[in-house]
Every structure is written in C-alpha cells, then in structure tokens.
Length: 104
Image (cartoon, rainbow, N blue to C red; front, top):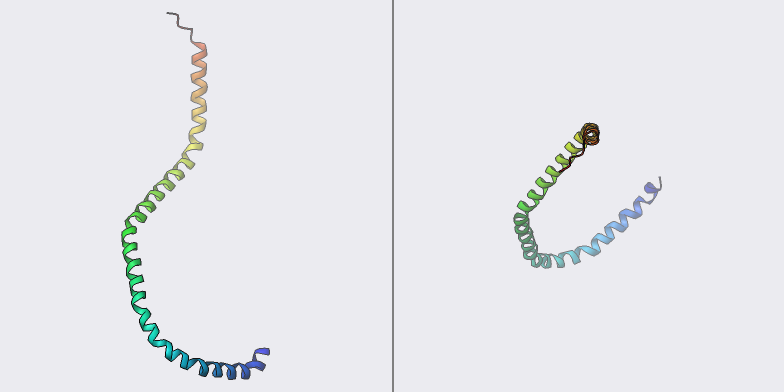
C-alpha cells in the first residue's frame, strides 16, 4: 500500500535522474569503446589459461573419482573382512601356542 502511495514520487525522481544522467552516459560511450580491447584481451588470456589448465583439472578430477571409488569399496569390504581376519588370527595363535618349540 505504501508503494502505491509513493509511486508518483518515484516516477518523477526516476525521470529527473534519468534526464540528468543521460548526457553523462552519452559522454561516457566513447570511453567504453576505448575499454573494449582490454576486455577482449582479458577474455583471450582467460581462454588460453583455461585451455592450458583443462587437462590438469581433468586428470585431478579423474584421480579424485578413483580415490572416492576405492574409499567406497573399502568402506563396504573392510567390515566384512574384519571378522574373518580375527578368526584367522585366533586360529594362527592357537596353532602357534599348541605346537612344540623347535630346538636346534
């Protein structure tokens, strides 16, 4: 509701500001054209750097994906192997303690 009450003032001040800034914008247009080659140079440099670094980024991403897959496989396999490893260690310990000592 307040927006509707202030709408005429907003319109008037917007039009006045636009009329004030328009000549300044017309004077700034040639300066913008002087700035254009620098923007193009910035784009070209960024594109070259991007093309040079892309293979390294791709290799790093592939290594990261491989490490993530190995971690996921270990996260699934280790809990399944631990009971088997504990049982194998107990059997080895019993056989080691039960065997007679070898005297040379």
